[in-house]
Amino acid sequence: MRFISATRTSRTTQATRAIGALTSAAAVAVAVAVGSSCSSRPSDPTLARGQEVFEQNCAACHGDKGEGKNAPALIGITRTFPDVNAQIAVITNGRSTMPAWQGRLSAADIAAVAAYTRTL
Ligand code: HEC
Image (cartoon, rainbow, N blue to C red):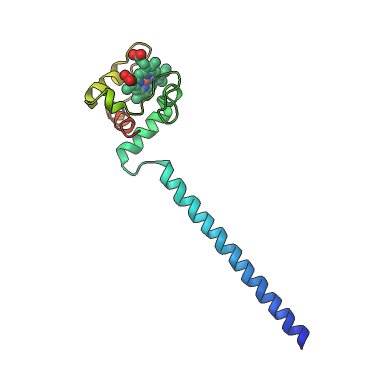
């Protein structure tokens, strides 16, 4: 009888441990899901589109986070362009070695990427 009860106890312990392991795995999965949804896209649809346009067209020169690479940093760009329309004009028409995006990006995408870079 003692043997059986010992076996039962150990099975219960194993089951408890298994549930514990599953619970921690679920907690990790939730944490990962929450973490990635925070860092992936801004919730505002215009800014989310702007980030997408930035990653596809601008990050190669301006850096993944606008920190600057072989082109100037865009972080703090609102100080250079207090007026967003002046910034949109540079993106649209280009300047020096900065390519013009007119004809390659829609006006809406240019406005979205300008808005996004103003959040960096
Ligand atoms: C081929 C490299 C390259 C790409 C791609 C590029 N840029 Fe630029 N960008 C530059 C360079 C170089 C300058 C500096 C131009 C100058 O000296 O007048 C610049 C300047 C700028 C400026 C003005 C910065 C300031 O401080 O005056 C803005 C705004 C800008 N880029 C936005 C963008 C956006 C938005 C995109 C994507 C749609 C983009 N750039 C893509 C190279 C690039």
